[in-house]
Image 1 (cartoon, rainbow, N blue to C red):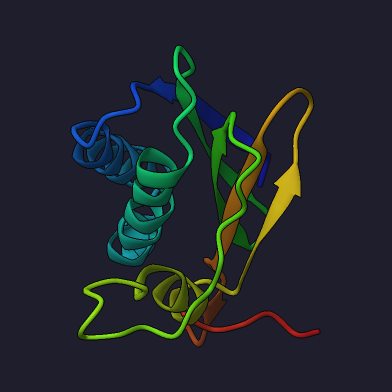
Image 2 (image 1 turned 30 degrees about the vertical axis):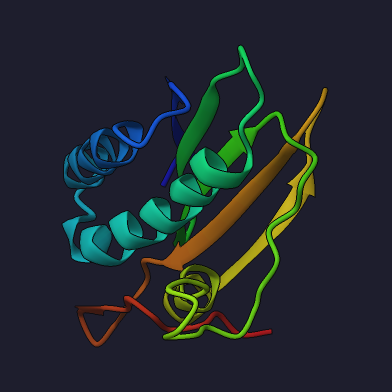
Length: 143
């Protein structure tokens, strides 16, 4: 399988999140990977929502990259903010904090990386391999 990448740019508003999810689902279906669309769109939703809420830099867009790599789909969200996401214990009272623990449950791995220029990349990888002919949605790759 060759590496395929789709790069899109989004305004820093909440309407970008559902639009990006729809585009990701379409890309995954085009790649024949509809089996991971639900998990992938939820992961993208959490990462992009964090960028919209906490990574705003006036005059800058947010970029997403969806890459089909051997055995995984990689979802990246690039923003110009240096503020790194923090995993906190979710709280019913606080009404938040569930996003990154959810990403951790759904993705084989995720993290934050520096990028060329200002800002950061928050990324997650979902396994798309097969075992006994069945797609692995949430399996973690061997270490």
